Structures are given as structure tokens and as C-alpha cells.
Length: 108
Image 1: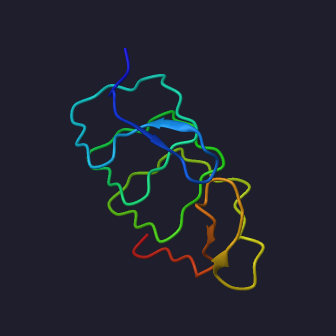
Image 2 (image 1 turned 90 degrees about the horizontal axis):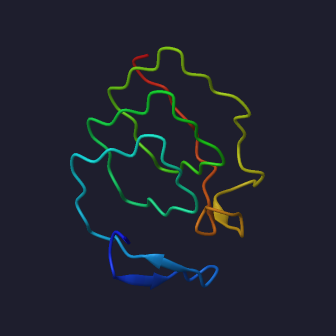
Image 3 (image 1 turned 60 degrees about the vertical axis):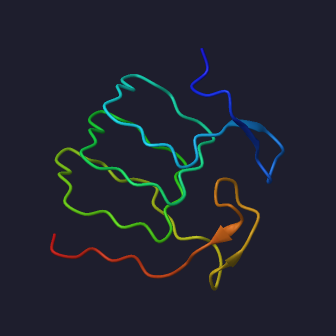
């Protein structure tokens, strides 16, 4: 059963997507779920459990992460975009925007 009957076409590749824009999702279990080709721009997570989750090819740009517990977390293959300045580029998952601004860790 689909989550919603609303559909939207992805402007970058023409794929039909379920349209969950502006939805509020509360008290949901996605245990062992797989997410692929997800547009999470301008979303927020609160009280979220990512224990044993795996993230691959994630595009973080202008993201704020606050009050997290990272025991046992592994960061590997972390790279900066191959661009001299922030600009529009055709890189998968970026919405064609590549941000090369500095990365900061505060109060660790």
C-alpha cells in the first residue's frame, strides 16, 4: 500500500516520486528499511534513533547537527567536493549544487 497517492516528477531525472512534501511523520518504525534516492532538503529530525544504520553517498551541505551521541560511530572516505568554489554541478544527489564551505566541529 503506498504511503500517499500524491505524486511528483523529479525535475533532475524525470522519475515519479511519492510526494510527502510538508508532511509531518511522527512515531514511525523504519527498522531494517532501505531508503534510496530520497530528497531530504529542508527537513528536520528530532529524537531519532540511527543505531546500527548505514549511510552511503550522503550529500551534507549547510547541515546543522546538534546534541548527538556518537559512541562507536565510524567516519570513513570523507571527501571535499572537487570544486574550487561553491557552484552548480551535475553531481548525483546534490540537486546540482556543490558547497565547498568549511566544515566545523564545535564543543566536542
